[in-house]
Structures are given as C-alpha cells and as structure tokens.
Length: 130
Image 1 (cartoon, rainbow, N blue to C red):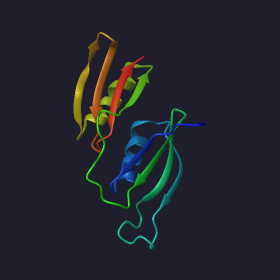
Image 2: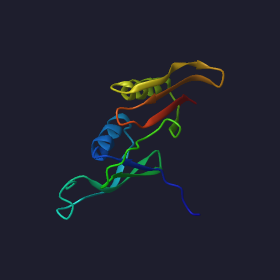
Image 3: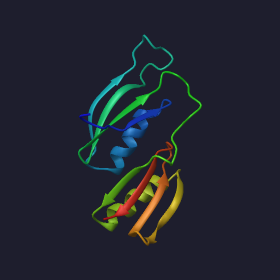
Image 4: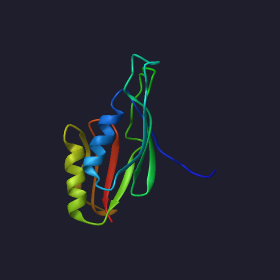
C-alpha cells in the first residue's frame, strides 16, 4: 500500500461541502475538480471527482450517481488537533451551525478541550486542542 485517502461520497452536495470546508479551513486547497457532463443529465454539473488537501492530507469528494439509503455515520470521523483554542472554537462553532453536537466543547480526562460535532452534511468531526 502506498497511500490511504479518505473518500467522502455525497448525494449532490459535494461542491457545497467543499466550499463550506474551505470557509472553515483557510489552508484548504482544491487540487482538482471534475464535474459530470451531459452524459449524466440527472447529475450534470455535480462532482464526479474532486481532490482536496487539508493540512497536507488529501481527501476525495464525489457526488454519487446512484441514490443510496446510507449516509455518513459518526462511527467514522475526522479527528483534528488544533494548536490554538481560538481555531478550535471557531471550527466547532461553524460545524455546529445546522449540525449536531455529539460532545460539547469541554475539558475531558483525555483532553484539555475537545468537542465532537456532525456538520450539516453529516460528516463527523472530533476537534481537539493539542
């Protein structure tokens, strides 16, 4: 194995999610983005594949061309360590808007400050003060 890359599959909201994450994380870089064309009229203009880099880690994004009954689950989440409390608080606040707080920001036995939140797209984020 040469590389492990998280693959996030959406139901038509991939580009909206990428733009939202770019507004939360100033160092997010959109490496590439390919959209479905007229050969797939029901999803034309949606994301066929996109590569995004966040803190040096690549993520793949896709709008599925098949409707699925499943979505994201908190049992798999993005775990982020923050250097400053301000960055942590800002990210948590943004993710909690129209999202679901799974664990409020607080001091826990394993962390000075930690919070767990599911964003408006259903992606789960564990945010930790390093």
